[in-house]
Image (cartoon, rainbow over all chains, first blue to last red; front, side, top):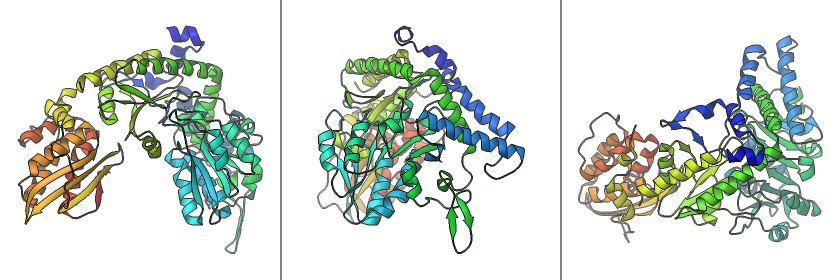
Length: 412
Length: 147
């Protein structure tokens, strides 16, 4: 296969690590192109989850018995693995959450709300996922602050000069995506952080999409907060990560109250546990953290250099393929882009596209992708979206192209 | 396995391309907006009523072929009917699109074109959006949703 020869990523070997990829759907081999929604799991992740439940299932940070020690050790090693994966300075800066959404909400409630005053501003971009819009809307409504939205171009890019002008004396926080789920745009996150920091404004980056496509270094980005979710990183659902600069996390009150997050409790007052446990109330998703550890090991065993090269080749191939089909229009043509192809077909609603290509065994997402303002910006009610991961092939894209011919035939 | 042609019958493709009664009714007795948040389908149904009888019905909006064709077919089917008859027809239509695939569909005239939807459970919401919206309009509800 040409992809193997060109990129050095042995895609057949990678595919063999993902049991689900050998199943069929609708009587045809599965072509999974919905990775921006969730990625499939390598067998090592599934085994890690099973091993925890069969070998050392116990609660963490509580018991003195051996199983609890083993579980605690595995859970904390997972935290250490997340730290090294994102190159954070300290495990105290790694908080396990349910997902990226919870990470953003944690920052919105525990960091933004107590600091926002009427007339203050939170600055986001016009290509945010609902999860990086709604928590700030709620915080602004509760405090009298204002949500300011930086515009994007017709290509789906952030205009840095315009962005800079919107960071004003009342801006208290900037929250932007590192890569758009609806357009594929990789944002100039490092520049945004620099511009914000020049004016003393902290920045949260939403890495839900970026984290499985490229090496993320929170120190190089100089991010104050960075959120990611495990299930898009080839890991389990229900486990996410919030990186927070220790000095900021220390200055924040807890988000959720409960067990494990306290130092001491009396009915008069409680004191908080140290970082990061202050932000991890209740029994965490222990299995999820352990599964995420296995997922990060897997990703690093392949290596982002090879993953990026492979996905870049797929994106180029897919872009040319879609551009070659009459009536198909790609939405989002940023110069710096991850492997997401959002598109519309003239005269055919994306929902109908989804149903027809599904019959060909091709799984794509159709709809507004939890980014309704993006749809509005580009004047479409919805798009179809093919999103590619390390195990996808040019044959997968050919199957999509074939299925789109079928769409055109039905609606001819 | 269900064939795509069962879903995208010629009648449906025709009503998608050229939806009937596809306009607003100024001063309609009732109107309501229907929204399917899953796929972004959004339509408004207008109903003109004389006493208990639907004298005119129309719709506007955007949506997939199934929701648009279903809305178009619905307007043709309920025009001239009483509100009670329209409600009863919705009951029968809903049974048809949610029935087990092996069951012989009831003869609902042109509406039978949508019987294929039952092979595609996720599309039932699309097919019934206009009907839910009509029901909501006649119950004087402001807007409705198939979620």
